[in-house]
Structure formats: C-alpha cells, structure tokens
Length: 329
Image (cartoon, rainbow, N blue to C red; front, side, top):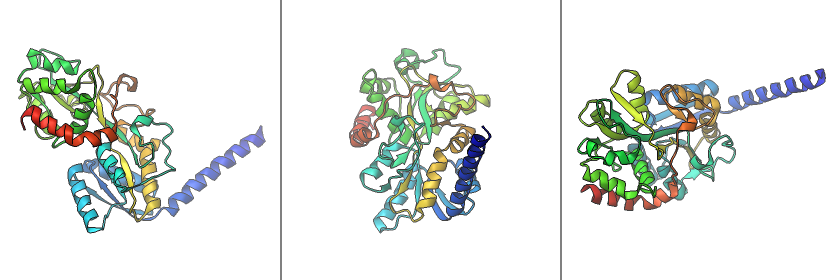
C-alpha cells in the first residue's frame, strides 16, 4: 500500500513539474484580437499571464465586425497581426475556417464539452454560452414563456429587437429561430406585423425595455440578469422552445507567429480554471461542470436550440435579404 502511495505521489509530482516546465517554455509575444468587453479581456489576459509569466500579451479589443474589418485589411496587405482570435460567433469563425485561415489545434482537450458547440476539426473552440431569449419589463401584464407569445395582441407595438445587420448575436438568433420548424420565418413575419422595428444592438434593445419605452424584446441573457440584481424592472425568459447562443469562440490563425503560446492560451480558456473565470465574470461557461452565475437557472433547465454554423454561413446572405424584405429595410 505504501509503495502504491509513493508511486501516486511521484506521478503527481512529475505531472506538476512537467506543467511547470511547460509554463516556463511558453514565452515571447502573443497577439490577441478580441471582442470581449475591456474589463473581461484584461481579466482574461491577467489570469493567463499568472499561469504563463514569460508571455507578453498584446491585445486589441473592438466589436467583432470592427475586429474582422481590421483583420481583413491585414489579410489584404499580406500581414495579419494576431496569433489568436477570441470573438463573438462561430459563423465568423466558420467563414475563416472555410478560407483556410485557421490552424487546427489537435491537442486541445474538449472531451468534457458538448460536441454540438465545438468544431469537429478543432479549428475553433466555444468558450461561453451567451444565450438570447426574451426580456420583458415587469410592468407588462402579459408574461411571455414562448416566442409565439410576442405575437399576441398585448405585445403589438411594444417589441424591441436588435438588428441582424448590426449584431452577431441577433444574426445567430434569426438563423436559429427561422431554422426551427415550429417557428420559422412565420415568427419574424408576425413580429413585423406586430410593429417591431429591429435596430442597433442588444444594448439599445435592453435600454428600451428596461426604460419602459417597449415592454418586450430579444436580448442576450447577461444584460437583464445582471441588471435585475441591481433593481432594474426586467425579467429574462428562457422560452419553452429553447434559446440561441453565441459562444465566444477562440481560434489560432494559420499565420500565428507564436504557436506554443497561442495553444497555451486556447488550452487555458478551455480548462476548468479558465471556465470558472468566465462564470466569475457573469457568463454561462461552456464547460458543463461549471455552475452558472447567480441569477441563471440550473444548467439542465437551459435548452439550446440546434444550430449549424456551416449552414448559417451558407445561408447568411439569403437570410439577411429575407429579413430586409420582411421588415421593409
């Protein structure tokens, strides 16, 4: 028994030394382009650097659309700068994968994750579940539980929603809901008849509902869930049909200059430590064993609707054109 214990301790020590040696080997400059909010990005970089102190991280933050515009210009000039991308949605990543811009990270451990939210070829990796459902003002008489409730007379003229032409989350929400045979484009046509005028991003929609200008809307989960805790008159609903999600995927560019550090960054985000950081920031972690933040229901109560990034990418232009026709854009 003592012999077995000594072997176990020796093995644990060897693993610890190996991890320490790997951390010491990972060094140099790492360039990250991200759409994370500034505070979250800084916390993420600080936590990574605590684990890999020999890495100097340069990060640039902007919305996914602007990050991609910058990166496209760099592609055009033949001089892409980032090693790693950490942006909002898998559709954008799927486009980069299709173009051959991403490097597979074969060694990434995704065994604990739902395969439905990961790229099977390991070119990009989901790190969070930022879901979109229904927000309503607590002054509203009708309390929605289904997307179809927004088609009721009580909601007419009282609906706000972000535009898929502006928001990546709204684009994925549209593709997810219209791809659901029980909802389809009939839901969006009904919303247009209800007088919904999609504009801007999630922040504007949230403010319109929280301020009482509108009573209902589509919005990402953390805005109303966090604000409710601060006393805002809002409730967030995970509808019976389920929710869509952007998953803040991370990927390594095939032009990365510091591949060891890039892989270490991806591995950190996917580790339980990295996932716990996401939860501490108020997000639903992608890792199923990490408890949801305060204000969220239990994991098993959150139903994700099916979503295929490759299909959404292929249909993106047609979907947006139909959206414009539907809402008279």
